[in-house]
Length: 599
Image 1 (cartoon, rainbow, N blue to C red):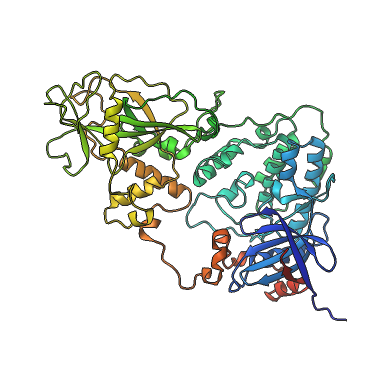
Image 2 (image 1 turned 180 degrees about the horizontal axis):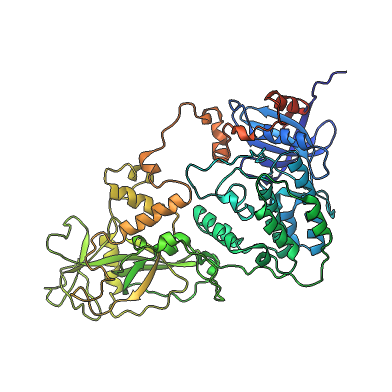
């Protein structure tokens, strides 16, 4: 009788999930009718160490425990690899969307099973590194039994932690459930799995975590920094007051030395002795961000500003980057980024005419053109501008490129201008109704729009052409127009001091670049904080001739360009201690081979 692996044909069904490097389908083995979960990940045939090979080897190494799923088959086809594993009903995240929070009795049962699962992993010197609710599956509808899944990040920890060459802000695993140490390094150990387990259980018990909201709103780096700072504020006692056993698990996990195995017998006993007291479990108070004060489809509240007003406009760099407001009930839990509190990120107010106000996606946006005073030798002759009629201006009706104000403008040598294009800002939801001493008529607003809207430059060029323009200001202006950053500004009334010598140094009357430089700086930082570089469109990305994209179907690129795999690191090639690379091959040889049949 041959021991060669059989070839199975799998009929792919509906998509049931997705991850960073794969999409999961409910599927059926054609010959046996067995329902399986089919993971499909994009990877070139040129990659030797792949994610699913690693995960299959881990599952084979850990097989036999009730919380470890069975793995059935593995296969590689052009551009993709496939993994067939045991199918389960739903994950705890899905269960939470239907019944949140879960009962204390149910969470205690989950805790005991996951402690048993981690004990099994750690006994094999395997650390999961991504324990979270979506990686815990309920075996069947109505069942109390669970399994731990997704071993793509699992590895064998070294007993020596090398000092990092450079500290980088990140979070290995999944942000809300990553351990404190995982925010700095990836060489996690047993205590890090237990810390993630503690966060998972408290989430199931209370419906959220104090940093749940902060993990989803803001820039990528901003979320990571905020969640890390929030986690450091909470010890186990503060995080789990109603049922202390969950907080005790957190404190134990954080204090566990790297080279010490957890005392699972004591932990199991601690949870088994815990009995629900029938008291209510209070969920953590939800936080509010600027983007959520008004839903996108909500009717517009009264506008805080009107077209034609002359006001002072100050870019709010920190708010534009962090994107948060304090919660409406006075909870000041948001931890501001100290680097944004320095003078580097402070801007002066600039006088301006508001030329447009609109309600868009839950926020008021407005367009403005700056006002400046001519300064000998400084006014750029090539800049489009519209003079404001002053007390000594020789104004007549034929001078159609001048505007006047109501009441009369008290200063001479003033003009309105737009640097490359009129500036656009968002109003804070807390922005009060702004009163203006001076206004311009609708006719003059239209005149400003006509003369200061660019006929050439970034607003009239396609982005691809604009970023190749020899003028760096046009390049930046084009990128600014296409930036996803919301630029928030505060609006205040213009007092009567004007540009004369005064003690008010917070207003810039002699800016000939408007808000351009400050806005570019914020948008550039916004791009960096989201993991990409502002200048990449300008300078281009050098292409590596050995880049693995060449082996992909072009028609799949739009779907898979961010899910492609590279060669996996050696730390993700698992094998039993004292064995060589051949062990991986033998583990995979024991699996069936997949011949995928699309549904």
